Length: 244
Image (cartoon, rainbow, N blue to C red; front, side, top):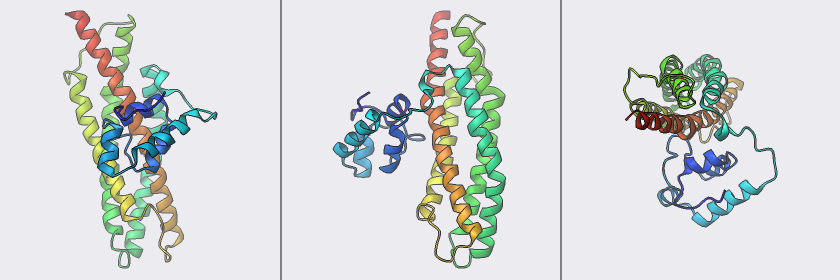
């Protein structure tokens, strides 16, 4: 695959996940705002387009282990991976991060006045993701699985209580954008998760945990926004056409 300026960032990463690291280095959001073209992203962020395209080309020609071919997975397998890997990571990491962000805000907040705000921001992220994941696991992902079954002739086309899947996709993408923006603000407030000179061990560990959380979130949201949900929407539209 050769990336071009008129391609969306999300489509490029969906085709070859090695490009995600390049976009991240250039500060271009490939998950929550992956629907923007490379041209638009470069123009908005003041990025050299030729340099970006050159690094994307280099990333896609490296002979290394490409990792999982998510774009080739069936939707049930992809949804199951999201739950077992990314949802599980969120549920495992948030209790400790809530504890650590509050602790460093209490201990260091007088000298580093951004810390109470960071604790509040992460609390909102944790709450939003908890409710978001429950909705996905309870209704959206089972519906997507039933859509795929119907497309393969293994069952009837499901009827969703929420109307078209597009209604849910727009809501889920807005929730992704909220958490993505909150984590981006935390990154900014912590100077890219760099600890100050007077940071204690918990402070340093907390910043490492936050960075790992954001890194996992980027892949989590990418798999949903750029792969799972667009494919499910296309299947639903195809089934609706077949019924008419």
